[in-house]
Image 1 (cartoon, rainbow, N blue to C red):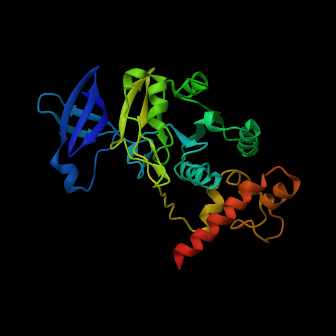
Image 2: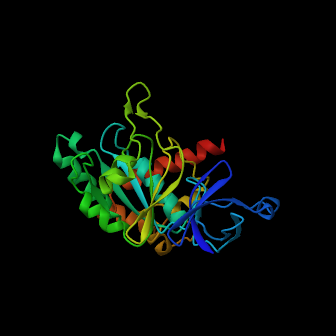
Image 3: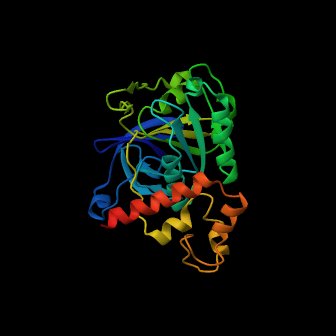
Length: 284
């Protein structure tokens, strides 16, 4: 019988198959081969022995969060508490590009924004790199209907640091999910971990994926690789004169031309330079 893994805890896998839920273990051959079933995997199970016998080919797989077959990554980030960071969002977008997964950005807690011009400025930056961005106040349902349109008929994962409002957003989409919501910790200057596992939640012929928040994301890229996957650059990268262009001082650099003309926003480029610097520091 075919099914999909909806959650995994301590070697036990919950499988949704034919609208019924089964709790299965993985056959020993997986462990011997160094293969681990992931949430999101399409699998073949023995419903009598309650064993996963086969993992079907994956469309995609991520290490963090550890999940398979994602069609779309929703990067959730708060306007405040924790504070907004273009650099962090660009890092998540780079991560999505590395893995060939479509991505969008959701800015939560917009009720904490006193100057609405700030939101317009954020919108203009993401528009300049063709990244869809949505603004929501999950507590009052503001912006939720627009976000819902992304989710239908796909497996969509929400990722972001702790406390940005992923679980609150899911509860606004469907209160029956009843996901535990975290609070912002002023002493930690971040959110308190609430979601402890990766879990698939059925939604309109697809699934929403709630994931644990994390404070750091290591891309483990070389400088040349960052230039190829960075948002706003990875499509234009091939138009540079040099195939390994780092978009610094090289001649006939398409990215520097876009920057000079105003087509590429300075915030995007400055954040790229910061990530290059971080790569250098990691090497040292």
